Picture 1 (spheres, one colour):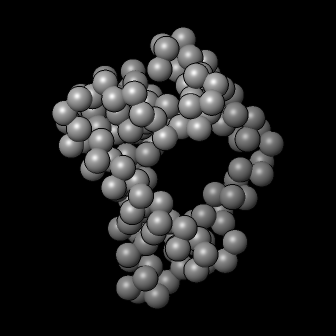
Picture 2 (cartoon, rainbow, N blue to C red):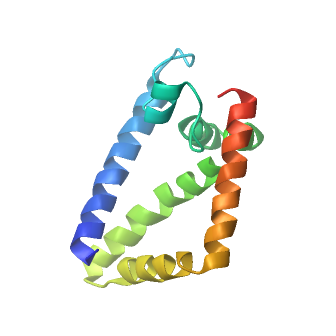
Length: 135
């Protein structure tokens, strides 16, 4: 993937992510049955990322233990929502490719077999935990 395509995708993901988070934070009824998760909508079974929005919401409110119990991936998402826009803006203003180069290094790291296996196992463990919790 080239730099411009990556940056465009990231801008779109950031915009959609912040809009979704903003919308979910403004809802007074937190027992909303709507979920954007196609896996849960089709199967009724939570996916590994189910609960991430509520987790990020809890992080924003300072409820760190509740956030972890909802979905630990929420911490990764919250961190990305803070760092990526700043990093992207830095690259666009300074006309550098530091984020793109970091993405390429991350992509290469994922090709290392043991790293991929560990990440898959962590994701599967989180998925099992989400199903067990009945998200």
